[in-house]
Image (tube, rainbow, N blue to C red):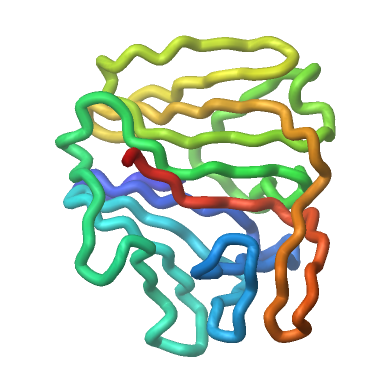
Length: 193
């Protein structure tokens, strides 16, 4: 995660293009269409005004470099108006190696739990928390929560980890018209309703 220079802006990067993996950005959950984006690198940004975007900086089609999953011009809650919590992502991690960043990292926060992070798949919900919002920290064999303080003015980051009982998921490929089993990591945007 990177923090903006002049205003509160949060950038989330979920893969390292040096791992030779790709991001698949699909409009429909569990399905790949010919118009979906498949790119070696992608990032998500949450801007101070509530703009939430997927970005594919090196994608060859300019009209697909930026994607607002909520629709053109739509916004989520501005960062300075988050008074409790704002959920962002639901992640499913099947391949740990795809989560590692190579190269230099300015500030590293290491989350450890030998019983929990033991090579078995896990899920993680990522949330933005108001610094005054209660968030109980748990650390046991089946679940874990972590609060990372001061990611932006008056905001913290909340991570909620839990075990997964599957090794991957099926994805329908509309080109080949068949289901494909994938053990690639999975990220879904979530929000309060």
